[in-house]
Amino acid sequence: MRRAGCLVAVLLLGGCSAGHPSPAAPPSVRFSPGAPGAGDPYFPTYGNGGYDVSGYNLNVRYNPTDGKLTGTATITATATQDLSQFDLDLVHLTASKVTVNDAEATSAAAGNELVITPAVGVRRGKAFTVVIDYGGTPGQLANKTLGDGGWLSSAGKGALALGQPESASTWFPVNDHPSDKATFTLAITVPDGLTALSVGVPGPRTSADGWTTWRWTESSPLASYLSTVVIGKYRVTTTTHNGKPMVIAVPESLPANGPAAKSMARTGEIADFLATKFGPYPFDSYGGIVVDDSRIRYALETQSRPTYGEGFFAGEANPTVVAHELAHQWFGDSVALERWQDIWLNEGFATYAEWLWQEHEGTESIKGNFERTYAGFDWSQTPGDPGVAHLFGSAVYDRGGMTVYALRLKIGDEAFGKLLTTWTSEHRDGNVETADLIAMAEKISGKDLGAFFQSWLYGKKAPTY
Image (cartoon, rainbow, N blue to C red; front, side):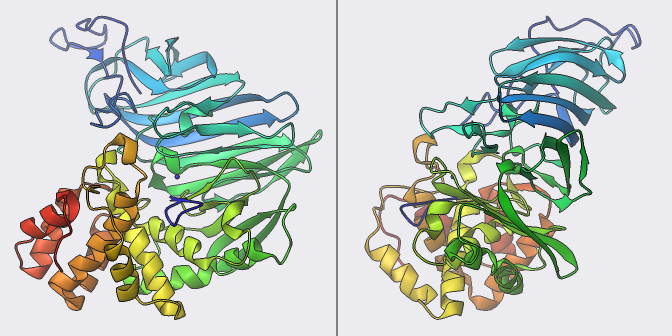
């Protein structure tokens, strides 16, 4: 994510007592509810426990006139314990019917959770399918520390769903934490004349009775906050790049050849340059969406198709922000976080990618960016454990970027280059923590880097380099 205005930009149990054996299970099996949170130290209630989602298949209809959304979510998952109940995250919307493995289940809303009790408990290691019919008026998730994320309507003209660290639960039932990545398929129906954009490979569009259904498929596992839907009046350009579809969408309200369009047109070029540093591009499609909504003052690395607030292109073309969000396709999307504390792994490498691109363009060297940032930095802020209030603070972005460059100086260009490509290949489609990077950097370089990372990620004074 990059926020505008500064170079940083933005299934599941509870409620029943454990210990009731399933009629279909041996008497020794004791089923229990899955945890109502994924256990993230920063956000303990985000996500849920007891299962692992493999895929979301959504069929959604949205009417901007009355702001109503209806949908059916088909969720495939595997139980990681003997489940009597499980939770899904769902905000503002209500489930009208739930089945688990084709058998009707009971469900109840509990705050931002949908608590589901299947007719028969689900054994550990068994795959199961949940189908949920739901609907209502979607809205925002209020986060007093980080600001609002989720569904934003636009005065009857359209809507969008966007936000970090959570947003997906405002428009579909989900395990809303990046540690549980899953594939994503969306069919979204909107009135004729409106565009409905999302992530992944575009599918066939169909129209009937004044409504058009747009289809999107992301076959690589994604963290739920990296999904999006954007509905409105857009100029959409669909081409191919390296044999993969590239979808660029710019609002009709912005000039056809203005700064936003010019910046988006460089998406393929920038992705190709970053691939020479980070390894092969990790997804089946490319693209970008510019959002004409003053409430979106950031850019977000929505998977395969980043979303940009229009403010980034208010004066002139801005390929640097494009480089930042495209770098996230490797660092943050393909290689995702296991816990939010380690967000510097996303933003530090994306900041370093900005410096790479600016040096490539000839506007400023990496060394110059590093030294200028180093000279003016407040070292009391640490990226390795920034705290919830500073999750998107300058330490995560700027000190994170400096840590990446200082690591390059510490281990040398050859080892550093190997580290970048090994990191993105060995952890592709997976989840990581800071300890994983330290271990890999030490293995590749043959150096003990404990003191280095301690000073750069957790120290309260300027590290030497």
